[in-house]
Length: 158
Image (cartoon, rainbow, N blue to C red; front, top):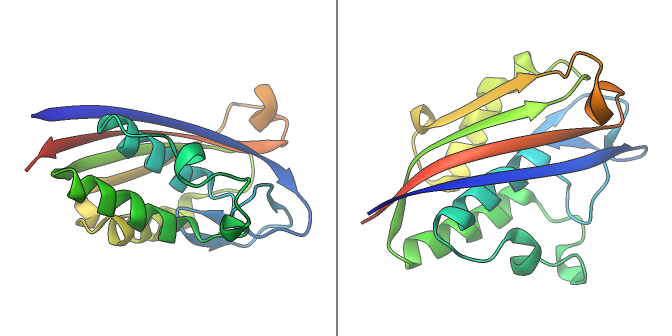
Protein backbone atom coordinates (compact mmCIF):
# COMPACT_ATOMS: atom_id res chain seq x y z
CA UNK A 1 0.00 0.00 0.00
CA UNK A 2 1.30 3.44 -1.02
CA UNK A 3 0.07 6.64 0.62
CA UNK A 4 0.66 10.33 -0.07
CA UNK A 5 0.87 13.05 2.59
CA UNK A 6 0.89 16.84 2.44
CA UNK A 7 2.16 19.28 5.08
CA UNK A 8 2.20 23.05 5.44
CA UNK A 9 3.59 25.32 8.11
CA UNK A 10 4.27 29.02 8.61
CA UNK A 11 6.10 31.04 11.25
CA UNK A 12 6.63 34.78 11.51
CA UNK A 13 10.01 36.41 11.97
CA UNK A 14 11.10 37.39 15.47
CA UNK A 15 14.10 39.08 17.02
CA UNK A 16 16.43 37.25 19.38
CA UNK A 17 15.71 33.85 17.78
CA UNK A 18 17.90 31.57 15.68
CA UNK A 19 16.78 30.81 12.13
CA UNK A 20 16.71 27.03 11.76
CA UNK A 21 15.44 25.44 8.54
CA UNK A 22 15.65 21.73 7.90
CA UNK A 23 17.86 21.44 10.97
CA UNK A 24 20.38 23.92 9.59
CA UNK A 25 21.27 27.05 11.55
CA UNK A 26 21.08 29.84 8.94
CA UNK A 27 23.01 33.06 9.68
CA UNK A 28 20.39 35.84 9.62
CA UNK A 29 19.41 38.78 11.83
CA UNK A 30 15.95 37.30 12.56
CA UNK A 31 14.71 33.89 13.57
CA UNK A 32 11.25 32.36 13.54
CA UNK A 33 8.77 32.61 16.39
CA UNK A 34 7.47 29.35 17.82
CA UNK A 35 7.22 27.15 20.89
CA UNK A 36 9.92 24.77 19.63
CA UNK A 37 12.87 25.87 17.49
CA UNK A 38 10.22 26.95 14.89
CA UNK A 39 11.82 24.95 12.07
CA UNK A 40 9.05 25.59 9.56
CA UNK A 41 10.51 23.14 7.01
CA UNK A 42 10.83 20.25 9.47
CA UNK A 43 7.30 20.94 10.71
CA UNK A 44 5.83 20.77 7.19
CA UNK A 45 7.69 17.51 6.51
CA UNK A 46 6.52 15.96 9.79
CA UNK A 47 2.90 16.87 9.07
CA UNK A 48 3.19 15.36 5.57
CA UNK A 49 4.54 12.11 7.02
CA UNK A 50 1.92 11.95 9.76
CA UNK A 51 -0.84 12.80 7.29
CA UNK A 52 0.22 10.08 4.89
CA UNK A 53 -0.12 7.52 7.67
CA UNK A 54 -3.43 9.10 8.83
CA UNK A 55 -1.92 9.81 12.25
CA UNK A 56 -2.41 12.99 14.30
CA UNK A 57 -0.64 16.21 13.34
CA UNK A 58 2.38 17.65 15.13
CA UNK A 59 0.19 20.05 17.13
CA UNK A 60 -1.46 17.05 18.77
CA UNK A 61 1.72 15.03 19.09
CA UNK A 62 3.89 17.86 20.43
CA UNK A 63 1.46 20.50 21.82
CA UNK A 64 2.68 24.01 22.54
CA UNK A 65 0.91 23.75 25.89
CA UNK A 66 3.52 21.18 26.96
CA UNK A 67 6.56 22.97 28.36
CA UNK A 68 8.77 19.94 27.65
CA UNK A 69 8.67 20.94 23.96
CA UNK A 70 9.66 24.58 24.58
CA UNK A 71 12.70 25.25 22.39
CA UNK A 72 12.68 21.61 21.22
CA UNK A 73 14.94 20.53 18.36
CA UNK A 74 12.54 19.76 15.51
CA UNK A 75 14.83 17.06 14.13
CA UNK A 76 14.51 15.25 17.46
CA UNK A 77 10.74 15.48 17.05
CA UNK A 78 11.07 14.19 13.48
CA UNK A 79 12.93 11.13 14.73
CA UNK A 80 9.93 10.41 16.96
CA UNK A 81 7.52 10.88 14.04
CA UNK A 82 9.56 8.44 11.93
CA UNK A 83 9.69 5.95 14.83
CA UNK A 84 5.89 6.05 14.94
CA UNK A 85 5.69 5.51 11.18
CA UNK A 86 7.95 2.48 11.44
CA UNK A 87 5.86 1.21 14.35
CA UNK A 88 2.80 1.40 12.06
CA UNK A 89 4.70 -0.56 9.40
CA UNK A 90 5.48 2.32 7.02
CA UNK A 91 8.68 3.22 5.22
CA UNK A 92 9.39 6.54 3.53
CA UNK A 93 9.71 6.41 -0.26
CA UNK A 94 10.46 10.11 -0.76
CA UNK A 95 9.92 13.63 0.55
CA UNK A 96 9.59 16.73 -1.63
CA UNK A 97 9.49 20.14 0.05
CA UNK A 98 9.53 23.84 -0.75
CA UNK A 99 10.50 26.74 1.50
CA UNK A 100 8.98 30.10 0.60
CA UNK A 101 11.13 32.98 1.86
CA UNK A 102 11.92 36.38 0.41
CA UNK A 103 14.92 36.54 2.75
CA UNK A 104 17.44 35.15 3.40
CA UNK A 105 18.81 33.45 0.30
CA UNK A 106 18.72 29.71 0.99
CA UNK A 107 20.51 28.15 -2.00
CA UNK A 108 23.83 27.69 -0.13
CA UNK A 109 22.07 25.61 2.56
CA UNK A 110 19.84 23.31 0.49
CA UNK A 111 22.16 20.28 0.45
CA UNK A 112 22.75 20.53 4.21
CA UNK A 113 18.98 20.68 4.79
CA UNK A 114 18.46 17.60 2.64
CA UNK A 115 21.19 15.73 4.52
CA UNK A 116 19.86 16.64 7.97
CA UNK A 117 16.26 15.76 7.10
CA UNK A 118 17.34 12.46 5.54
CA UNK A 119 19.43 11.57 8.58
CA UNK A 120 16.56 12.36 10.98
CA UNK A 121 14.21 10.20 8.90
CA UNK A 122 16.70 7.36 8.54
CA UNK A 123 16.65 7.50 4.74
CA UNK A 124 19.11 8.31 1.97
CA UNK A 125 19.61 11.93 0.95
CA UNK A 126 18.53 10.97 -2.59
CA UNK A 127 15.01 10.47 -1.17
CA UNK A 128 14.72 14.07 0.06
CA UNK A 129 14.18 17.16 -2.06
CA UNK A 130 14.29 20.70 -0.70
CA UNK A 131 13.60 23.69 -2.92
CA UNK A 132 13.50 27.39 -2.08
CA UNK A 133 11.49 30.13 -3.74
CA UNK A 134 10.22 33.64 -3.16
CA UNK A 135 6.79 35.15 -3.75
CA UNK A 136 8.27 38.01 -5.76
CA UNK A 137 7.45 40.51 -3.02
CA UNK A 138 3.83 39.35 -2.62
CA UNK A 139 2.08 38.05 0.49
CA UNK A 140 3.49 37.91 4.01
CA UNK A 141 6.65 36.07 2.92
CA UNK A 142 7.20 38.60 0.16
CA UNK A 143 6.79 41.38 2.73
CA UNK A 144 9.56 39.70 4.75
CA UNK A 145 7.25 38.98 7.68
CA UNK A 146 7.97 35.25 7.90
CA UNK A 147 8.62 31.96 6.13
CA UNK A 148 6.31 29.18 4.99
CA UNK A 149 7.01 25.64 3.85
CA UNK A 150 5.11 22.88 2.12
CA UNK A 151 5.97 19.23 1.83
CA UNK A 152 4.59 16.13 0.17
CA UNK A 153 5.72 12.60 0.83
CA UNK A 154 5.14 9.08 -0.34
CA UNK A 155 5.17 6.26 2.18
CA UNK A 156 4.59 2.56 1.72
CA UNK A 157 3.51 -0.25 3.97
CA UNK A 158 6.44 -2.59 4.59
